[in-house]
Image (cartoon, rainbow, N blue to C red; front, side, top):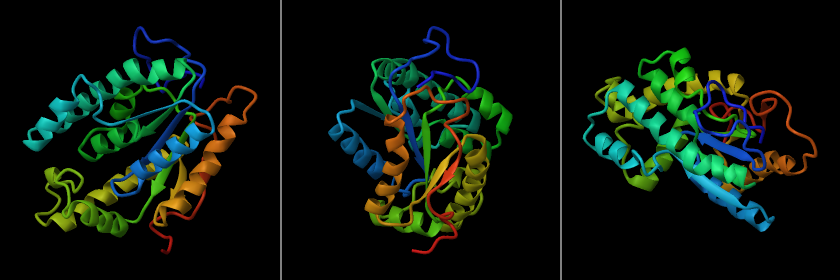
Length: 252
């Protein structure tokens, strides 16, 4: 981990918290991120690596406030983005950087990319989102679990019994129908993730398959990080890669 950031770093943080690896697992709700983070953490710990996991809305500073505001549907788009930035910044300062400095691997169940995509589809410019979250450290690896919207819908219904108001984009008034709004919202998010895939060097993994198949491909991407004998070269996480065809076009 070289410690470089995408933009202006937070004051008071070390410029280069060397030692640990920062691995990000991105993807929509229902793509299998949480399952993969759990599997990957267990695998890395068996290999002898200390692992710290993190994700959205886990700070002690504003996470509860975000949850309460979302339950009341009271968050404006700008306020939401700023609160999530505060949540992420608090975790970066008090959890992520200390873990990396201690030589631990940090596994992030989502990172700034989801936050940026959500802000952009709600009216923010890409440049504004870039600058807002520019204090984030550049990960050593970003894996995007790519699943078709129909798969995401099926998994959400199977797990929760219904669709989430926010994950369906109902606050955007795309449609009065929850299911139609879900597909329209996911399409908008997918367009932003497509742009970020090149901009931030995502490694896409076909997440329409069984968890063990997804896990095998993710491990193949992660394993080389621990065989490196020299500092990683310049660039946002290395060259982009593709494990399977794009999820929306893949079968199964």
